[in-house]
Image (cartoon, rainbow, N blue to C red; front, side, top):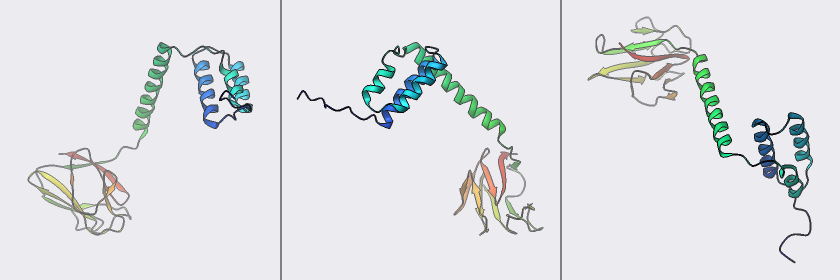
Length: 179
C-alpha cells in the first residue's frame, strides 16, 4: 500500500465552501461566465469526493496578487461606506449640555421639582442625579426602576460623563455636550 486510500475520500463542507469561494472569486474577476459559474456551483453541491471537487476547479487560473488586492480594497471600501450609511441613518439624539457654569447638582426625573424634567413614563419621579465637582461631571442613579445608562452600560454606582457620551434615563437618551 502506498499510503493513499483505495476508496474516494468524502468531500467535507469546508472543502465545498473553499471550492465555492474559488468559483465566486473567479466570476467576480470576470474569468468565467455566469452560466458556467451556475453550472459549476451545481457540480460542487453534488460532488461526493475530494477528487470531484478538484476536477471542478482545476482548470481555473490562480488568483493574481494584483486582482486579489484590488478586490480586497473594493471590499474594504464597500464595508466602510456601509458603516457610514448606517451611521448616517442612525437616529439623532437630543443634546444634554453640561457646562462649568450653572447649577452644580441637577436632579433628573418626572417630578415637577426636578431641575431636568422628563415626561417619559420609563423615567422615575426622581431618576438620577448629575453632579459637577472640579470641572468633572458625574451621574448617579437614584434607585430608578428602568436604570440609568452611560454609553449603553447600566450604572451600578457613580460614573463620570464627558462630552460625546450617550446618557440614558429609562428610554430617554441624550448626547452629552459641553456648554
